[in-house]
Amino acid sequence: MAVKKHKPTSAGRRYVITSDFSNLTRKRPEKSLVSPIKKKGGRNNTGRITVRFRGGGHKRLYREVDFKRNRLDESAKVIALEYDPNRRARIALIEYQDKVKNYIIAPVELKVGQEVVSTRGDNVEIKIGNCMCLRNVPLGTMIHNIELEVGKGGKIVRSAGSSAQITAKEGNFAHVKLPSGEVRLINIACCATIGQVSNADWKEIKLGKAGRSAWLGRKSNVRGVAMNPVDHPHGGGEGKAGQGNPHPTTPWGKPTKGYKTRKPNRYSDKYIAKRRK
Image 1: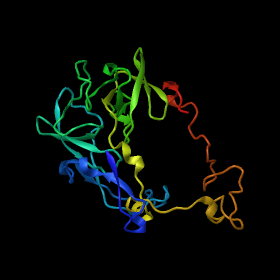
Image 2: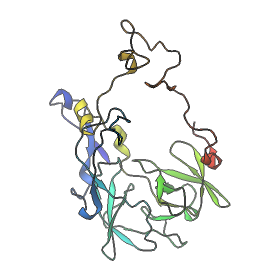
Image 3: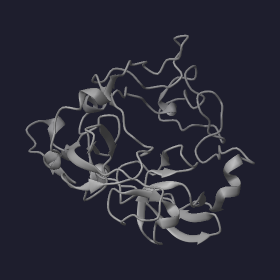
Image 4: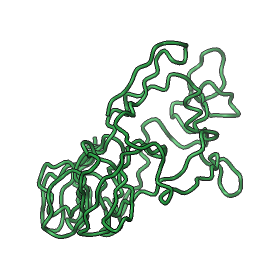
């Protein structure tokens, strides 16, 4: 994946950096694998705003991605690489021998025409796009779309450019180093897909103007110190006053700016071998 700079034909075009979509092989999604998305504008079922700064944006269709890969020991052929507006990663359209099609997260270096397979057995090739149990993955191999519970489908390491590595295996657990630096214990019967998630250059993208952010469904917002006291605890004051509050808070009074929000004694604490820094 690469990015593309543009000529400064206008102020909003001067600093724009966009994705280069030249490696995508299909523009329209598979009709049988899409469903409509009804926008909510950050509001709940009573109409109250529960997520701020959401609204507008281009209409989208949801691509139903197969995170479970539960058609075991069946070979599938990659027939297209596509753009998905709902995630940063690219997706691949695969077709099984019975003509059933599915979307999967596309890893780096996955090519059209390549065969991929998913299995929980031991006889599987360590190849980009193949899905297998952690017990069969060699140490140091890059993996993504990792299950946390057997058969529940991939839950973590699915964003563009991300990958994890198995650093050790002890008993029924593998020590998996996640992109955050955390080392987590995961059952070796859980499955993962070989390779790094595609579109690693997404972090180089620059929107260039507020309008492009609005196209993505993100409304403009300002800092708390720029608001009035009625709108935010940091608001008010004369001139360029600071937040004033020695304990910075959210608009609803909850501590922020470095405050730890992870609950103590979470069920998953026992599976964390090394915490992220």
